[in-house]
Image (cartoon, rainbow, N blue to C red; front, side):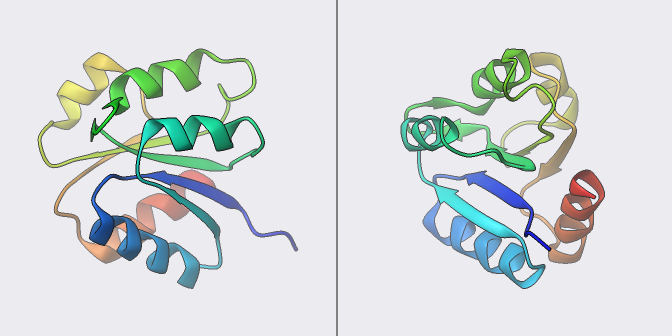
Length: 120
């Protein structure tokens, strides 16, 4: 059985590594990105089952990227999970329409449960 692919866009190195380890333990194929540029480049060659996007990024913001992928024919069916320490779910939902929102800091068990619920 093929592993489901998850693309994670998170600029904080430690959080990105923790998410990578958590999802790897759940048997997902995980690709990690520190910025929008590298994420976009890889998105051209990857068909993910889920995208996890941070809101504040060094070269833009997750709201704009979320709207972009939700309006693109190739990616509009891919679930998007937004994360932020600086925005509320209401704020994020007003700016884009992710499939779920996780506030930071997050509970590890809750994070894994939400990812599994969106992907499966």
